[in-house]
Length: 116
Image (cartoon, rainbow, N blue to C red; front, side):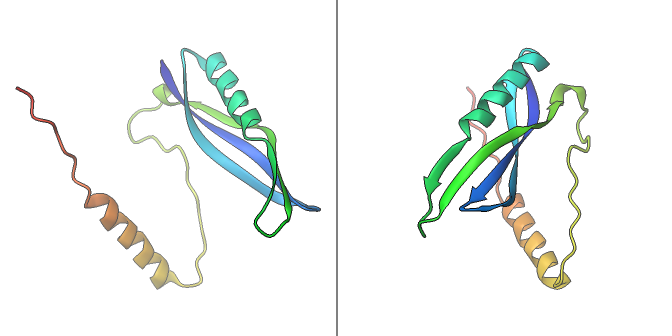
């Protein structure tokens, strides 16, 4: 099985507002691209729902479509898959956030089971 990175796009409607979209990057598997695309479309359709929020607003998640499907086996280690640029009003706070997050990730030491 090969691994594929997919991007699903949903329109999120809250009452009469129709200006909110949610993009989800997900991992899926398949023997080939066709299988991965089929799985991606099923995930998208399964994500469609309507419900009342805590404040009583009607919320509708509608699957728009699949926006990307990347065969991860086609990319070498270290290949750029996604890049996001951001502007921050408080640069120092943002740097502190990044450093705190990195420290948390780097402090997790892998554990290996003893083999006999």
